[in-house]
Image 1: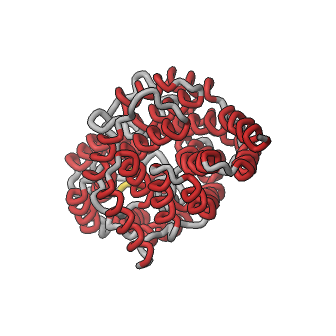
Image 2 (image 1 turned 180 degrees about the horizontal axis):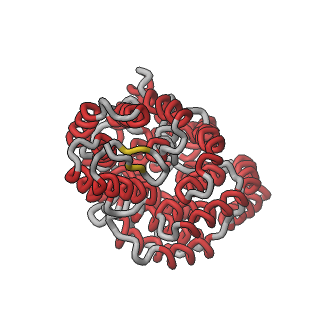
Image 3 (image 1 turned 120 degrees about the horizontal axis):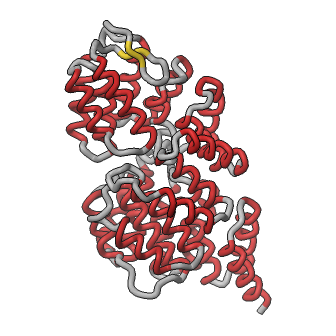
Length: 442
């Protein structure tokens, strides 16, 4: 067998130079959040139908796109073909297979074992990375710390690698290490200026440091030329909409929703489409930026169609937003019952956090602000367990703050706002703090 290697110097068990090249390019496209991943993997399989790693990567790609039968077929083929390949490739396929087959807890264990022995296998490591990765959705007490603990010891193994720098930057940023996060993100983008993941990390740095105008300008210059079919296209536009909301430019945010984010125009994975749409519209309600009725009905219909049953906590809580605001009590009651049942039977990694959030969102939507605040308050320190980034989860703290303010619990609101402002600057939080102080004094 020829001695082909990927960009990280890892042996690829194929006799086809074309297959090795196409696979390596597919991995880089995947790590960059660029288009063409499936096409390159299909090219690799076409050049060498026995190339196990290409089948495994294709399986994971199908899974993220919700094509589960295709994912199962591809990973079964990878398992068959990997016998006789290198130990690294056998471990690689076994790890990806467990993830595709749905055992996320065991898959994460295997990722950690694999990374300890083969630290430069970036595709496997990336399965655990990020707010939607195996760690982020694992339901642990703080996935941010766990992610950082996985990545930081591998820094020397990767050196000046654009993908790893962006991943490590994101981990730093989620832990409020903003200076280091920015340094790493800027270096990553210098090495790969068109990396979607690099630009995504940079957007988070701007958001967490209050650089809303700077962040908007960055995305305005970066997004042109980024294709709609790219995995982060809609989500990066969601970040652009957040920068607009932060500047109180409601019209710009809603224009982005209509043109880039709404179901039917957004080509992203269903969970990202629903979460971004629901979270943006909910923020508009919470912030009082409601110049005209919001299109909750279409988001609610998309949620019911794409996630007919509870199963992924991050999806469930955003579906609850849509159902509650659309007034679809039948779907909301069904979802709440399923989430409670899953929690009671130990099927929710995040435990009782999810049922509490679902119920609190329903109360808030009905105007029961005191009850919503009382239910949500004890779970705020645990909300990290549902996954998602700090920026994504902020909507739940914002909901609690507005519940406090609307219920007249101004001292509670002031305390939470001061704690948030110690973490990062926010003009909106400053304004809310001033309003709470005036109301409390009266």
